[in-house]
Image (cartoon, rainbow, N blue to C red; front, side, top):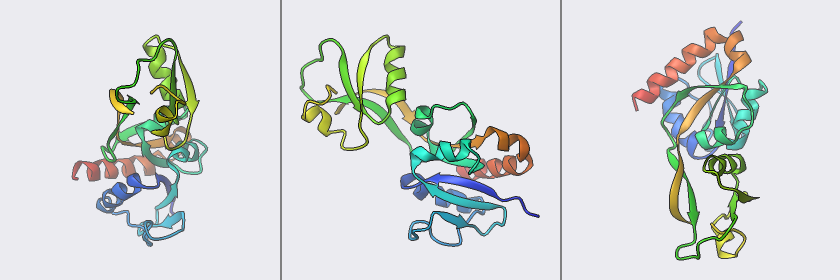
Length: 196
């Protein structure tokens, strides 16, 4: 009986950049995930299937065992509040920066700054490490409106919080129980990433 490893992949840019990497590792979905409305994709390999989910859900699917491995941005992993994942491989794809930004020419914030973000934990930790208290307002989109409408103090780049790229994460229990299948797959992905 073949053990099937389920790999959860973020929709969007990460999926776009993972498909050529998967192909170099001989993992080819039988249907085009960019054209299909399906979320689960069998591949040309009997031992690997892909699940396409929202970026923020990848760590949850992996942590709870619905997926053995996942590929998500470091920003999502920094925001995740669990300690039940291994992060064995930086794929070096989907690079970006997580930045603190504010309105150009706006007044300097006096006292406690207000920050609008979907990265509440990352932001809280960043400012705590600097010894600053901030009021954090959770938003999920249209961040650029927050300073313009006075919801938050801080969108011209001021400082970089973190450089981000996509990482492979593995469920700790799956790594112990299915190590003989997972480690070779990670090695194949590492080789594919190095050859790009």
